[in-house]
Image (cartoon, rainbow, N blue to C red; front, side):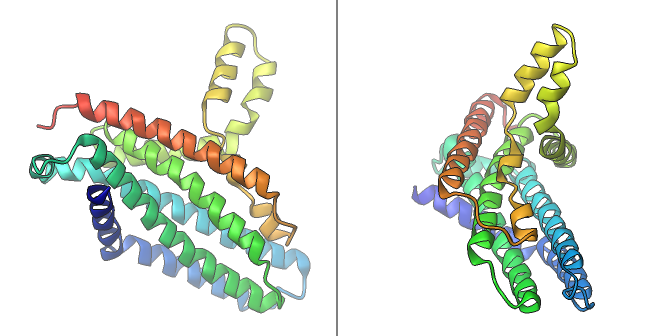
Length: 258
């Protein structure tokens, strides 16, 4: 466990030494402040529009940070040839995978905390009330979603050679699942066999990322979702993350290092 925590700490430090997080945060903050400086909050529809745009920026930025960070981890170790002394300490390949995952997940969690804290301060100061429970649930479920994304990207880094291609493919897959995955069963109803069965199999196999999207409740200042739902979504998300990590470990065991 000490080795895993040490590896994850290195990953977190690497992220916050780079400019990616700071650039994305500054862009998101500037756009949010610019929109919030307008007299929008006298109109409920305009206020909801501001929240929607801000949350969309947070989601895009978080996806980019998670995928860009995870996609580089193992390929960078191999390219710099630091993987050899690392495994010679000895550190098992399973510990490397878990350490890289935990580091990326913690780093994205810290980034999410900064993003959501800024969003809640700006939104609450304009609306004169804070929906803390809704914000907390949105932050937590978003972080669980990123566990799936980070694990999937780590697994992809052992399949695709270049981090750029892996990152692009994972970003497209994540957006596709998020926006189209929930509709695959409806499309399957209009298809003939064997296409219908294949599409149904894909529908039930993919992680349904929409389960973690509670932006509508934040935008409309609604009541938080039931904690039973948040708990089930957490178990569901972590189960998929574990499956991707097991796949990463199996691929890492079989993949030659040179």
